Image (tube, rainbow, N blue to C red; front, top):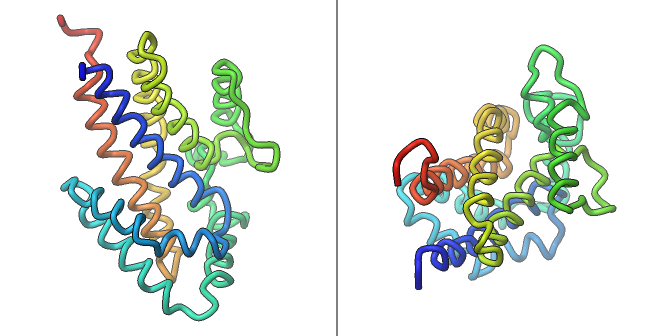
Length: 224
C-alpha cells in the first residue's frame, strides 16, 4: 500500500467519524440513535479514539455521559429538551450551531457571510443539503458532513487527493475559529452535560485531525 492509498483508507475512517458527529448535531436523538450510542460497536469505536492521547479525557467524559443517559428518567424527552434549549432557541447566542453567529460577534445573525460562503462552496462541489434539513448552510452539522464527504473522497479521487486534503485543512481552520468558544458555551449552559461532552469530543477530534493533516499534507512553501 502506497502513501496515497493509506491516506485514502484513513480518509474512509475519518469520514465515518465526521458523519457520526454531524448526525448528533443535526437533530434530537430518537430511540434508535440512543440505542446506537449505547451499543457495543460505539463503545469499541470510542475506545479506539481514546488511544489518541489528545482525546483521552474527552472520550472518557463522553462515555460517562452515555452511562448517565442510561439511568436518566425520560432520557429521550429530556435530551430533546436539552437540544432545543441549546441549539434551537434564539438564546443563548453562544451555543448557536452556526458559524455566522460566532464569526461576527458584534453583529451575530443567521444567514451571514459564512452561510453564503458555504453555499457557494457546496455549489462548486456539486453538493446540496438535504431538503428536509431546513437550516443555514453554515450549521455545524453541514460543515461536519462536508468534512465527511471530503475525507471519503480522498479514497476515491487519488488524482485530486492533495487538493481535497488542502480543502479539509481550510475548512477545519475556519471551524476552529469559533468551535472552541462554542464548546465552552455548551459546558456553561448544558446542565445535564451530554451535549457539552459531545461538543468537547468533537472539538478534540477536529484538533487531532488538524495535526494529522499537517503531517500528511506537504507545505507548498517548503521544498519537497
